[in-house]
Length: 49
Image (tube, rainbow, N blue to C red; front, side, top):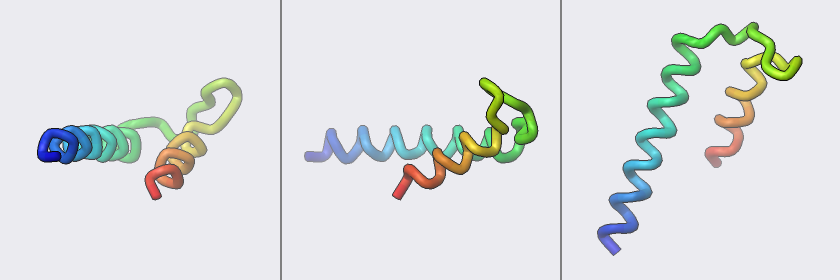
């Protein structure tokens, strides 16, 4: 059981690090596939619950 908890913890940390980089460094007004970059961030945050 410890192994699975460790893996989940590591993956969660990666997710939050990626979110931090996206919020602080990415150009949220940039268009990706004709969609505002901030929309991807919104979906990522929404998917966390």
